[in-house]
Length: 115
Length: 230
Image 1: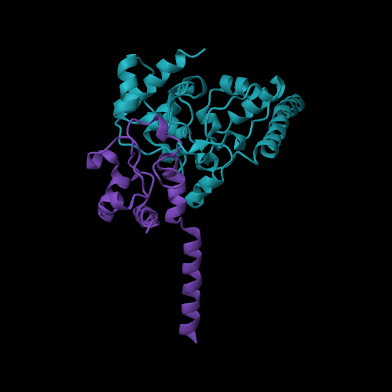
Image 2 (image 1 turned 60 degrees about the vertical axis):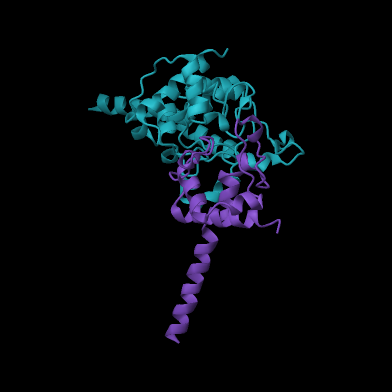
């Protein structure tokens, strides 16, 4: 009985934690859409003024060529870290590692929507 | 002794008038402004996606951020500073050429008369929870060549991805910066560029790795372009 109660409590706690945590989709909306677009197609409201166009996250071929580690690195340390544009900022000072992992997970959802 | 008590009572009464007035303004600001602007720092404890719910910038540290004279003037003539609003994705709509700002969804700020603007500006300037960040700031306004400042702002630091350093030149998700010098305290500009998340943990401004000298160069560029504005 005690084990059941404990399991129920733990499950409630983890459900509450999940509800409170930011999903990759929510984080993408806050930090990424202004450049990468509300649809993730690289055509955000800032894109028209940019010298280098933001990555189209719905481009399956391009995105498949990037490993999760590369995506994590570029979000954390910015475009410069992989010899790309400074217009991609480093978000490592704003986001915790688990939040960046959540974003990488969401990028994988975006890139595969066409499949 | 009697005189001392009388003087003391007079002092309390004299002090009581502005205190009461201050409390009234605080209540009015909370009532009139609080539905769009945060007036305390509770948002910092919420999950990041609270950022998506904001209708206007937080004002809980307004006294550390703004110049009083700018507040007084702007409240009487509130012009848009953020081309895409306080949370840009909420005002972006897809088009054939990519996302555009849906201006129909952007709310207008109420206009205050001079007396109201003065009271509100005075009250907002009392909201100074980050005095320590301001006091720790070492920025002394200086000069920078236009060309160098422009290259630093754009090519080297990529600030123009989100901000405009001249009308219609630069990104639209961040507030325009060619008027930043008029509206913001110099120490705030420098402190915010250096550590934006220390002010607002859910800021959409990236926490960069610029050293102090680089931050001061950016601040000097904002001074240069700001002073050229009417």
